[in-house]
Image (cartoon, rainbow, N blue to C red; front, side):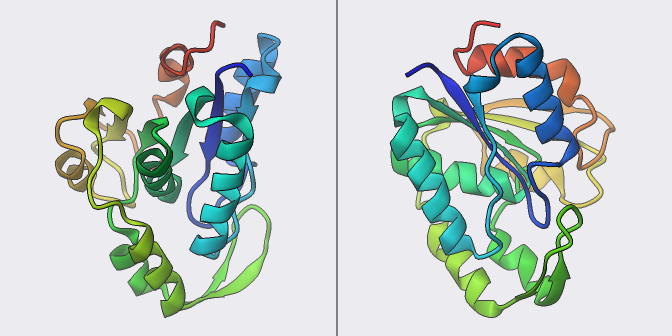
Length: 192
């Protein structure tokens, strides 16, 4: 197997998100479309974790670099801690079981249109996935200071000691993603 990226999208997002499509397109333009897997994650955290685990086990943890955006950053943290993969965290959700408690109730995925009910059992599942500790050598944190969804300082504190790129301005979408993408791909061990 070759080094590859396992891209994990955020809450109420999908593989059709701008960053996911941009990443897939960038690799495809270089003939490397086989170096990225971008699954549609179920809204149920336990099922999302099972799907992520199945991809890592199939690809081999030593071959996988997780790239997670927002809630996908949390899932990447969990998976890295469990499997020893490297992870790039894009404006990651820190302790999402607390953050999403305010959103319990009816939800709709903005990309797929799927409607579902976010329940307390889902935040409980997220709490159970939070790792007790992280290995700073495995992570690279990417945040922009004008993130309108999450306070970037929470991530900077939570991931203290990891490689950090803190960009002034921007927003939750990480506007500088296109500029950082070549370095992220190299960091993942993919020769582009």
